[in-house]
Amino acid sequence: DDQNLEKLKSFIIKKIKKKYPSFKSELNDLHKTVNIKDINELRLFLFDQINKDCNWEEILLNLVGDELSYSMGRDILVQSKINVSIQMPNDKTSLLPMHTDCASADTPFQSNIWIPLTDTYKTNSMFILSEGDTKKYIENILKDRKISKKIKIKDEDFLRLKFGEVLIFNPSILHGNVINKTDHTRVSLNIRAKSIFAPEPNDRNSDRRFGTYYK
Image (cartoon, rainbow, N blue to C red):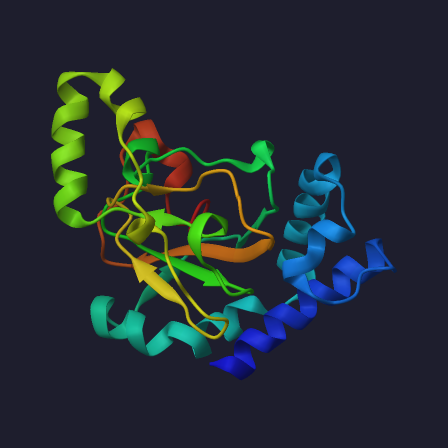
């Protein structure tokens, strides 16, 4: 797994160096080279490069193919594009409020795959609530939407992953991020997968179907 993740990490570092020759190759120190106002441009550049020039599908299969086959069978659809996330210290422009993917038309039959290319901890990481808390909060939010702004994220809700570890999780679980108050940048990739036999979205969400959102 480390070898496959090193391929992804090396690809990202190489492309950053192409845009920022002074970059020292430490992803968690990216904020020392790149200004916050330029981070989205860099993210879009990396998104374009990795989906155009990197054989990420084969790497992903080597990383989590066995786990996905165990839970969904061998006939697997994968999201058409792999996504890049960068969260630098004190960057208010890269926030992803608490959500479930299923609230934005993603299918509950998929699995989300989160691939950190740096160690993640505390607020530079993503938070994920437990299944119990998710159920409780969603029931309360349906009664009063203002409650969502009062939910407090606990320290133990933030994922602590070392480089080399990958997380597969249910998209229905509430997750998101907050302002990174650590001294390190977090760089991660994320993508979704589902069985080819899982139900397809209806006409309202036709952009999430096999052939567009999935391949």
